[in-house]
Image 1 (cartoon, rainbow, N blue to C red):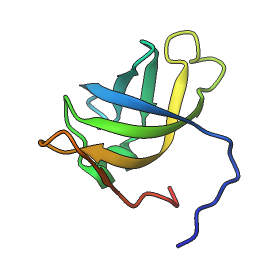
Image 2 (cartoon, rainbow, N blue to C red):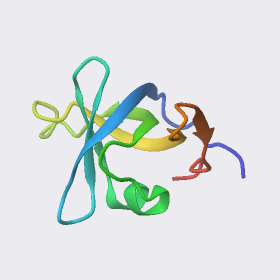
Image 3 (cartoon, one colour):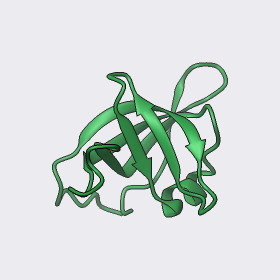
Image 4 (tube, one colour):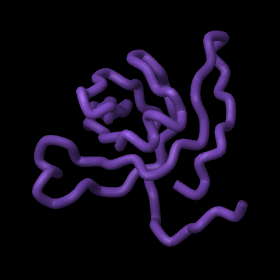
Length: 93
């Protein structure tokens, strides 16, 4: 699979802090900004509370941006129990 670079994304280390009843997730980056993960990403990566991921983000929809500035459109790695990042394949999300 080839990576579609149609969007200029900003990569962040993000810790997952909340899972919603619709199985979407919210996390926080190192700058303290909130990042939204849709349920497709959450399900594909089996994200759970406390997981740390490298999320490639774009600015969230304008009407949501004041509360949640960023929206993840791709995740390229997750932190494992040993503290090392492991690559994951979500290039065509």
